[in-house]
Image 1: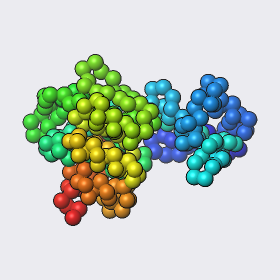
Image 2: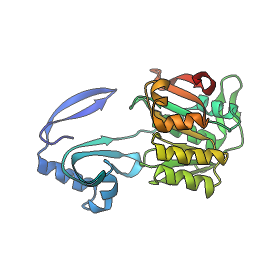
Image 3: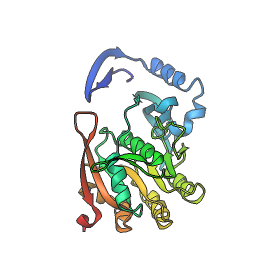
Image 4: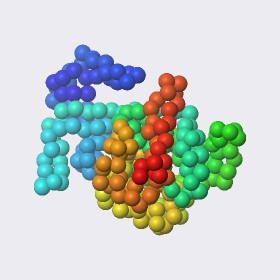
Length: 270
């Protein structure tokens, strides 16, 4: 939704323009409705550019930022709202689970792609499969292993969606900053594997190195179009040098509701 511009929908990856044009007053009313009349209650995440709603819905917020130095203290004159609505899908990620298992849970797996390909959907499937102990082995069929104590760091309220199930050995840290969530998962929840989305900055990388040193592998995602782009980022390069990940897996949609995988092992990046 946009103020003084046409609204649009994304359908099957294509932008469809609508005739609806919201006034600034209407845009403000929509925002207040989303926040149930209490903008203050959502101010922390609004300043980070988004609002988390129930059932994994996230609303991106665009406007004029008020800053103190590098810190955003408020967003004003809201000009657009981007609503992302997740949908339930069959659990995916057997190949990622098998790859992690082949590393003896010593090294993790980093999934990468450009935005919008489906990294979060894939991570949800991986988390539920690891927490249930059941996934497909390409040569042996369905594997029935001991469920792993799986901790999901759901910073933006999206990754934990559709991970319900009484039989899952799964804990979800919802709304936690990744760095803090990783520390809690490692030190307090006795995690056997940690799953989180969109890693990359240097401070997070230091926390990930610490958790790896405690023997907890990580399945995570990052935005990149290639391994070269991935490892050009300072934080991810630090993780590579610490050998956090045994493999980097590029993904693209296969047109049948699943993914194609491009696996690059750590040794191949030397």
